Length: 170
Image 1: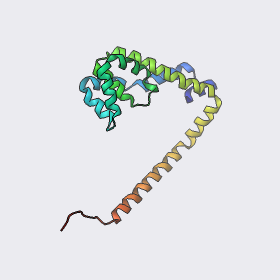
Image 2: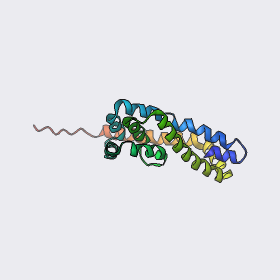
Image 3: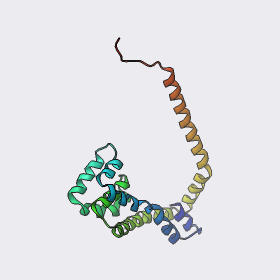
Image 4: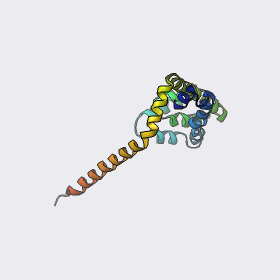
């Protein structure tokens, strides 16, 4: 988005922004597909975590196979699920690498087109925001990190002060 906004004000081109996004967004997807080819259901269960969502998706993939996986690869950037599950299941059902790359490229370009279009539409306003984030981002990150460390240290100190209660009956 910031790259498109900078292109709008004359610092770069939209083509460079779109082409730079492709490897950045797609770099690990073939590896996830390969993991699905190697480990199948176990990889999906591992990525899905303890919730039922991964299992529900796994059941749908078992039932429909490529009919559900192919469209999911193309729309995965827009889905509120861990993207790795989709790519692992693609490898599990046997989607070829070339098919994965073509469908992934379609989805990536759709997503990139929307985000860069928004950045281009915002133009100078987005450039101002990007420069402010660049200027203050490091200090805000350090402050958040210091706050987290302080909270964890206080929690550990309070836990160490409380006596240990044993449930063993004498």
